[in-house]
Picture 1 (cartoon, rainbow, N blue to C red):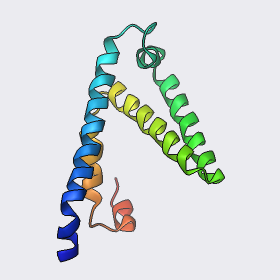
Picture 2: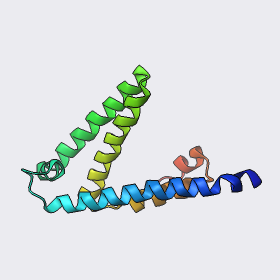
Picture 3: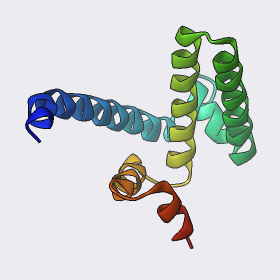
Picture 4: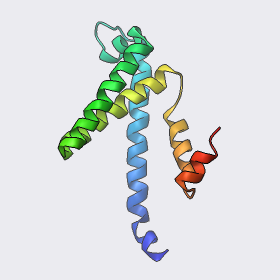
Length: 121
């Protein structure tokens, strides 16, 4: 426990930084729902609907896989950022919040992945 206490401030800073970034991005993505699709990539994606959003998520997922397969660490980070971005677009498009995903992840701490999977509806 003593070792964890030593790193707690750093862990809290990372968590706050990550969640702050996600919330800032979510706020911008919500604002883009009312933006002009001619002037906003996200507004254009929203206007093209669910299939366009899902297609983009599929493309970004494939790019993550290829970057990992190539062992290109910089590309992995870049492509995962794109994937996270587009999954946030999906969340906002569906009227969901990043908090909901974070809460779901928090619930899984301290539970075996096998147990968690077996308890899913």
